[in-house]
Amino acid sequence: MPALQPRYMAILKKVLVARFVPFLPPLLGNANPADQAAKQLSRAFSAFTLNKLLDIAPQAAAASVVDDFNDKGIDAIYYHAPSETLYLLQTKLKESEQFKQEDALPFCEGIRLLLKQEFTAFNANVQNRKADIESALDSCSHIKLVVPYTGDGVSQTASDALQSLLDDEDLDEERLAALVEYYTATEITRDLLAEQAYQPVHTDIALQKYEKVENPRSTYYGVARLGDLVALHQMHGKALYERNIRYFLGSSRSDVNKAIKNTLRDAPRDFFYLNNGVTAVCDLIEPKATKNGAKRFKVRGLSIINGAQTVASAAEFVRQHPGKSIEDARVMLTLIKAPADGPFGKRVTKARNHQNPVQTVNFASLDENQERLRQEIAHLGFEYHYRPESLATGPKAITLDEALRALASQQDDSRYAVWLKRGPERLANPDSAEYQALFTATLPGVMLVNAVLCNRAIRALVVDYEQRARARSQERLIYRHGIHVITAVMMKRLRNSIGAAAIVDAGAISASLSQPDTLDQLRQQTFNLGQQRLTVEGPLAYFRNQGNVAAFLVDLMETHFALAADPAIALLRNIQSAADAYPRKRLLDYLSSRAPQL
Image 1 (tube, rainbow, N blue to C red):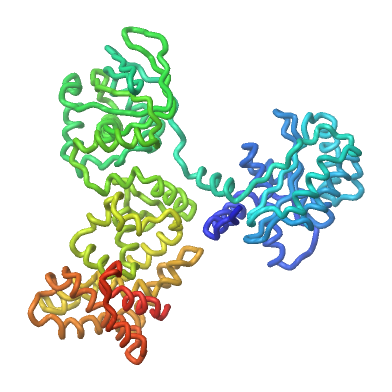
Image 2: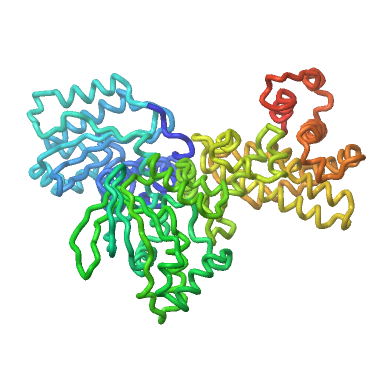
């Protein structure tokens, strides 16, 4: 069992401090502040576990904590009345350590004492709750042991010690559950991400003149009131479009969305004839009663996969014109029974949206890895918009295009700088090897955010260099067309910052880049090298050529990283192999690895 990954440990600690520590019982000991902070995190982990396992309020979960000196190995005691279960927890908030025998044995001792109701052996946290615990022991039908841990497993000796307790007939306690429940890194990660997931949409839908297709997929289609779909939009927001490739693009950016609003304003009865309709997938569709000519359907897990612009534009119209009725507006609605995140649901989404003018990058929304990144990044205080939408603005907003450019700029492969110059379409195709190399399943959300923040800082300064250079000069054109090369070199010097477990300070990064020996020095070195190389071709053509860019990057990194005296470089310059994944791979990889870190 792998330990909790550092990025999720950082998120967990943030949640513990904000949500549970304020409600914990006061510490009984007088440890120094640093030890107290660590102890509070450990205690809060017990509350977090109860909050997730039993869906109880953070305050109630925190009040159950008894962890302190002389707790006899029991960190939390909670009676769950609905299930008549008494929960006894011992937690271990350690980044790499296993739950060991030395942790299990005190827990076993504490359970024996508690079952015998020998409260004098425990600390004040337990004794203050004596009446409640006695009542729970009298009332409960089940006693369950829970061991939450963040390390890489449970040792065999610890497991044996706990099982020996459960098998001990001398305890004469048949209410003890036969197995210990372990709450591991897998469950912790799942529950942290679930906090930022959109909740499934469960509702009723009414269709007039409906028809049914039974095979191969249960499908209903008919005429729906547009107002009913607008009401769903108002209630559920983005959750209604969880599997769509785009959110609302806004009427100001789309002539189609303007036309939708114009029709609702001028001729709502004609809407049905002028619109292509809406398609949704559902986990469950159950026919119910027919009333006033409309058949009602109970649907679960509803997700509109085509028609988001239709519904969202109508919702915007209703918001902007509260006195205008759209009661007469109807729309063709197709309901397909298929999990939205299953292969068939994704095929339907892709096929139905290919009939509209969409970009290849839009289909990245079907990559579940993107949703995992969005959920991680939300915990960090940023908004990751991997679906196109109108509201993806502000310093805390990160778009998929920004993410693509930032991740591509830190690659050792010189071809990424050329692909960025030619246009990021190749990188944006979720089926391409280039996209998959950028958005790996192990890419941490914090790394993506840091890469974007560093990339923004670099680009802002390079654009400023360009604007301050003389108009129509070669210098200005070198900065404009060589920006991806300059960024690629500087991003390599920021790898430690990008790979940090916490969000970088954007202001500190900008200040560091503004030092004379960093980006400004690289700017001058780029201009000097450009003057030497750009004797025949113009900057635009030069920086779109892979051979040119590979050679330029090699010389620029050697100069900027002060590696001219490195004997390995001369040897690597003479090595060329057709088997390499990209030209000058070994030399570029070596130079990249030698980048001095800021």
